[in-house]
Length: 366
Image (cartoon, rainbow, N blue to C red; front, side, top):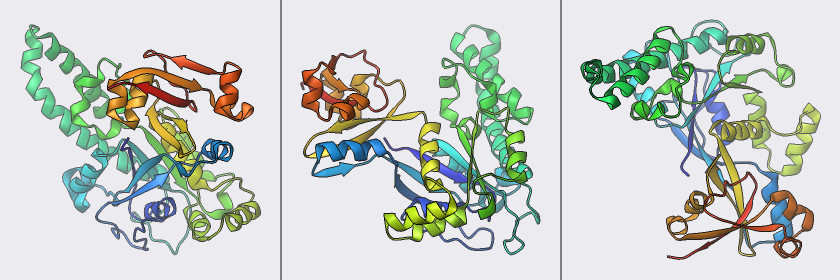
């Protein structure tokens, strides 16, 4: 599944530094605005200890983790919705993403220039929000014009439903809220899907703090928490500069020693990747054999045939049954054969909803 998370924020808040930690692709990071113009794209692996544990038992020839694409989008500024600072181009880059990682500067450092002169993450958040909301409002208004007359006659029920869904979104946008706040029902979402609204995308606020605030946060982070408490959004505290130092270390042992000295259990970027995965409503199932142990990304709630289709469309078309072992059962019993012997391998049909961590083998015929 080609899934993208876009890293957004004002210029000079640490987006490119964070991107460099996440990806092998190296974005230019410098102490001045707009050092990133074209979006940098990196494919990153999703850390998952379950894949390692399965591999230890199966001892495959290859291990293949699942991945997510991260896009480092150039810094937005006031007026982006009207094209300021190459705004239209940047907003177009965001539109292509499935979720947004909104980086906020939550550290004070006179040596690092702030585009607005001083550090205020809540103000920075509102600047970005406003630009995205204005662009969404423009898109919604254009579509409303197409459906308004037809909807008001009442004869075309689909037009009425489209108009009503659009008006719900328009109302919250005009109130200075994001489209997410419209809380559209599942049956209303198709009426706005073609607009690819920027503020309907799930968002994770990434508070970039100094090293001293890595574990506990600071007043800037608390201000952000208060500002987003009514949003269906998550917050993650990270120190981009420290993550950059961890990423530069060559061995796993060196990284673990560094983390131990800082009193941290795992790199912040691992938490970020996992949070992004969760943000996209994704989960993982595994295939495990001597040739390959592999993690596959699916959307939560997918049934077995759809999950099979992630491997190959023929698997979905010709789906017959799925052999399923729960991850914990596989680890506890140690092998597929052992699970089969004690009845922990189940045969499931087309209506089976895949659980996170399921170890699966598909029977199909084409």
